[in-house]
Length: 421
Image 1 (tube, rainbow, N blue to C red):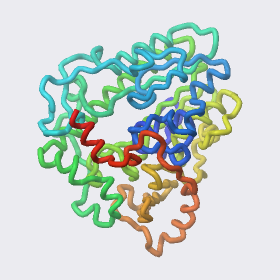
Image 2 (image 1 turned 90 degrees about the vertical axis):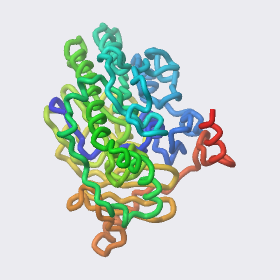
Image 3 (image 1 turned 135 degrees about the vertical axis):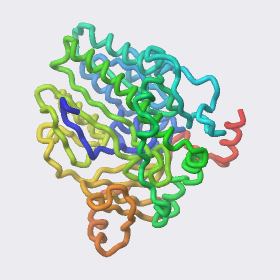
Image 4 (image 1 turned 135 degrees about the horizontal axis):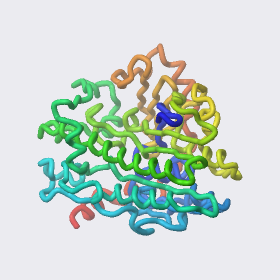
């Protein structure tokens, strides 16, 4: 962040891995593509089937494209996007060591909602190996421009990392988020269903694991920060340091108990706000901070703009070049996040406006309520602002594309059958 521009009000197009990454890499939002949730092969969307991803667009304009790690979600790689991918086009990263006894946190029936240190060192971790491969590619001389994608899995669950990263965050130093007991009292039923307070949050608190969970999250963030540092050091020592654009992003935010919710899968600020940092030689100045509302959808058009490529007319984001040149510029329209069909959140510089598919709403003033404790929807003082922002909700919300469990005749039965295998 010290070397470029940090966007402090950046948000994902969807608070889930698959739809967020599909939107970022194609530049097309979920309400247009129909890719809303994780179990949807995104290339089966009629819209995304023919979409040109960022690396495809760059390859079409004379660049090479290589990648490693988690760029697309899970089992939905896209071979058409890459000339080379490591470890392979069907495996986005090497495996990780795990504790001997699972679940390591002692919470039954948690699957990968688990955390603990592992005795192995950095070199055993998949993300560390990805960083090594990327660093080796950066050291190579190139005869043409290149697009290089590096995807780190952590801090995705499960939170397993070498012991030394846990040691940096002693349990007695851990501060838990403020969570009022009645924080969901003014939340519509649709929002409470997303929060699932009787699910993960109840398990964590009942088993006394809250501080350990936060510790594990911080440890995994610190581990991946070390991986990022290795790649940046490799770039700095390479022949490409002075003419390589670096953009650092995450695919969604994360709840650690705020609103009695864990993970992402919600439309509050903790779930939608993401890291976004840019370093563009000759454009950005060190230490820039931009507070304008922006979106991961904006990465694609910004890269195209910076590299002087022909514009892709299908893109729904906007170029951030004006903000990279002048970070103090904050005059942006509200940015949109979608979770499931017709569930949307708008974030302006000051307000968050959530509207669910059933018409229920939430509205928060971040100037006076940054933790979103007080839902102001419908109050006289914000009616005018709600009306002004509402025009930015999408008017087209296509049906979910192939793979959405909600389109099955009996999705509950299908889910039970899958879990029984």
